[in-house]
Image 1 (spheres, helix red, strand yellow):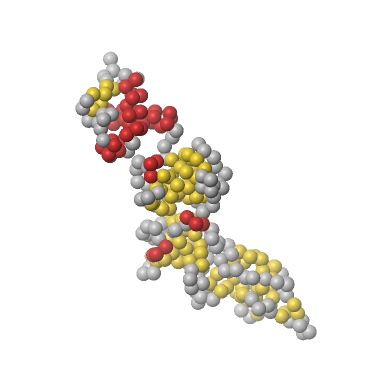
Image 2 (cartoon, rainbow, N blue to C red):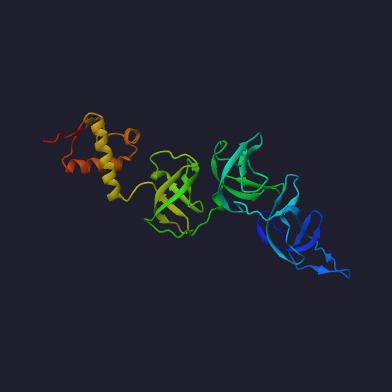
Length: 289
């Protein structure tokens, strides 16, 4: 069976003025030594068919041309069916964006399949699928196309692309642009835009093989970084910040991007190191002798 959107090895069934007719089985011949075409064949255009003879195998990708006809090409696309890839936006039109996927006919990214507004020359992470009309199309809604069972384990450092933000769950990330991962809401202290490339720590691997991530280090390492952040902020503020260990979580997050627990750990470490004093009205830097 010839499959739309996939690279496949097909057989030269007939040579015509327009190119090669390819099929997915071995050719049979009639008494005049002409190939008997299978019920399903596809054209490989003449400009790509030189050097082949009847019975040869050809690796081709099958898609629809500018006139919406199924056609084969020996060009290798940047993405195949049900896979995910990063593609460049060539133009934006009234029906959606068109992406460069390595073929002469650009790939449509409909507006309804965009998770954010895209612009010309943007790079977007998309999956390739067949729409209801039988055409190849792309989508930025890639959750169901990403793979579980990555090679990563807890505490590994990974890189990925943010592809969706959910108010209920958190920020969804495609690790290596292949594997499914989530930064839960409680691990997010700054909004991260769709399309951003980020580095994270693997917190755990879920039972279904997906990754749970954090943008923060393990507590003992993160505490040092948070303490440095607070101390630098104190310097910049002239030695006093009106936020103590009893301040609201919202005020702390707005000022430092930290949870209240992380802030208390940080100022506790600075207090024990005699870098600051913790007073009723906030924290103060202790001057050096």
